[in-house]
Length: 390
Image (cartoon, helix red, strand yellow):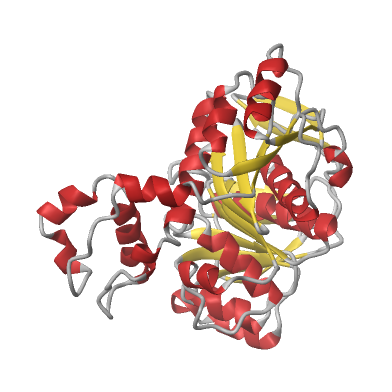
């Protein structure tokens, strides 16, 4: 198939709409549903991310995309019992690929609501079973087992978008897009991200262990497909905080850091033991946890809203308790798609347990940034390569 007609573009008034190949056939086959313009943008961007992660790490990879940036991404490494619980998969059989998607979905469950999923490997039954019970718009993968395909086809009353992509497809070296009637052209960003990028360690601390190198690679590949400015926090094979599309880098670092903090606060014993009613919907539970962690919970408590979701009124998680818990977060890796212009980014990253950083370097204030890292014993590598994505 050389082209596919779409219902409309980004918005309903943007017609006509289609995707097409100037040469050759489309590299995808729609097995179910009718994916739209934004669905396909998410599908193609997320597929590139997981394909590169698999090539770089040798591990199954998954991504949860919303509006052309990842809400989360994960690698198929073993999950702790606590991580399974906060990702709400402790009742499921987990394959390595299912672990990867559990991590991708579990990084920022509010942002992942209605996501488009990318899987690096053939979708198996455990992964399909997990996807079926989440609110999602579609999935792209190199293939599906027969049973997994039938499980996914039953989702959303049979309308769930399921796309199979040719894993051997190689796009043209030159890419183009039109903006305001003007055609832009550039070479594809084929820059390879691997552990060799982490050799130029510019801080006093020169030690980056192998698991942190893996997480830095995860963060950097994530940045390559995140709308800029972007910063990614990663830990244990999971992107735990993604800040995308901010005009100020410190705002990006704060946004991603706040998401990483929420990910860790969800592991606090008070959150793990929240007395939810048995019939609460999954999205309502996720939203309620987010409110409970926030500073707004006392206002909600005063209004009696807790009765909608809990069997008994939970004790608040105080600011002091939250700060004490966050101070135990360690071993976080951070990647930035461009240089840090000020040490304030490092100060904010440190508050979220960052101990390893990869960034291009090249700021006139590199010395200040390095000094701030040295203040906290952070190991930082200069990659020498910017990873803007627009």
